[in-house]
Length: 327
Ligand code: ADP
Image: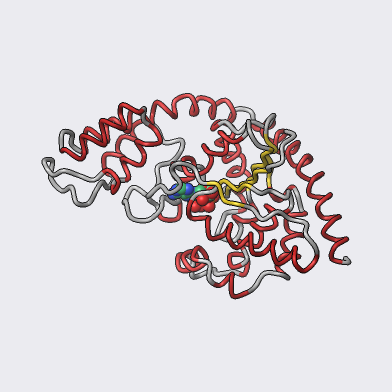
C-alpha cells in the first residue's frame, strides 16, 4: 500500500450492475483517487442483503459488479479490492458500534425512510442499522476520506458522530471521516425527478448497448420550462447538461450551454451529441468488461487476495478495539 496518511474507503452494493448514476457519482471518482491515496474499495454484499434478493443469483451479481469495477479502472495493484463478507470483522465491529449509536439518530436517516416506503413488505432491522455497518466498514480501516454521491452525505455525517462517541467513551482510536464529492455528485434519473437509482427504474445501465443508450437519452427529461424548439432553456435545470459535463469535451459543453440558452440548438441535437460522447467514453470500458467476464477465476483470485490484505488491517484494528473496550 502507498505510504500516505489519508485512507480512502468506499463501497458499492452488488444489487444489479452499475448504472450511470453510481458510475458517474462514485466509481469514476474512485478510479481517479487511486494514484494519490491508500484506497480500499469494497463490494458490500452484507449491505445488499437488507433488501430482497435472490440467493441463487447472488454470486453471479457479485462477480458482475467486480467485472464492472475492474473494467472501470479499479486497479488491484493500486487499491485493496474485496468483498465485504470475506472480512467478518465488518460485522463484529458493526455490533460494537451499534452499542454506541443513538437510536434517535438512526431514525432520522432519510434513506431509511425512503427505502422503507419502497419496500414496506420487508422493513428489517438491517435496513435500519445500515449506516452503523457503514461506520464499521470505514472505521475498520481508519479511513478518513469517503468518496460518495450526494445521497450518502447524511450517512457519512452519522458515521462521524458514531466514531466521535466511541472515541470519547473508550479513548481516541478512529479518525472522523470526511465525505469527498465528485464534480457530478448527483445524477438524476431519466425522468429528471429523483436521483438515478436501480430501485426507481430510471437508470441507464453501465453495459447498455448503443441502441439502448440512444433510445433512453432520446426519451429523457430536459429543462421542464423548455417546451417548444424555439423556447430558450436553462442548462442548470437540465439533467442532459449535467451528463454533458461528465462525458463531453469543453467545446461540446460550451456549445450545449450556449445553444440551450439561446435556442440555437434543440434538445434533440443536444441529446444526440450526449449519446455520442457517452458511447465513446464507454467503448473501451465495454471491451475491458468482456475480457474480465471471460476470466471469472482471475476475478475471484483478485478479490480473495484483496480480502487477505484487508483482513490484516481489520484484525489489527479489532485488537485495539477489544483492548480499549475491555473485551
Ligand atoms: P444505488 O443507489 O443505485 O443502490 P449504491 O447505493 O450501491 O447505488 O451506491 C454506490 C455509490 O454510488 C454511493 O456512493 C452513492 O452515493 C453513489 N450513487 C448512487 N446513485 C447515484 C446518483 N444517482 N448520483 C450520484 N451518485 C450516486
